[in-house]
Amino acid sequence: MLPLMPFSTLTRTVPFVTQEWNTYFSNGRVDQVAGGWRGILYANLAIIQPKTSWNFFANTNFDYTLLDGGASLTWYRAYSAALGGSPAATSGKRAEQAPPVPYHSKPRSEEGKSPEGKHVVSGLLKRLTEAVERTGM
Image 1 (spheres, rainbow, N blue to C red):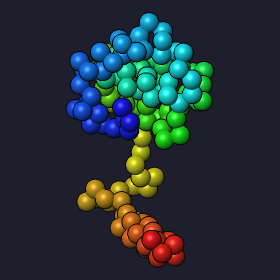
Image 2: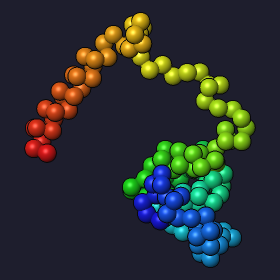
Image 3: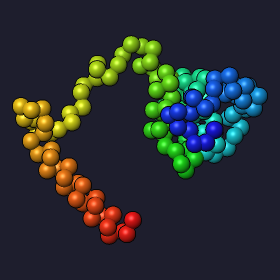
Image 4: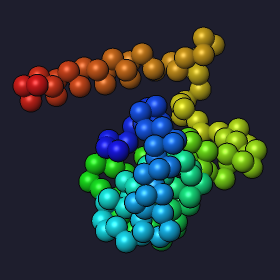
């Protein structure tokens, strides 16, 4: 079950997760589990019931104590959404209907690249290299 990764559906098959869920966590038993383990269990549920998992994590009053220290609400929402749990999965409304998020705040050149892009990337790489050297990594 741990860690829950994008490839977990390949190692934790639908029949296995279904049997595990029905044996140990169905009929409200999952809600008796305290702390971060409950979040792990609901994230794992996304493999067989992505909408139930999505609804658990998309709750506007979500209790953050139900996340273990190695996970985030963003990750669990993304995971359950990717498996078909988000409302967009069945509504037909996709990201292209939302306003686009600009990648660059300045106009691009004719070549389709940001005029300052090369310098920004090389500057970031230089600062990253310097930070790594300072820490001795």
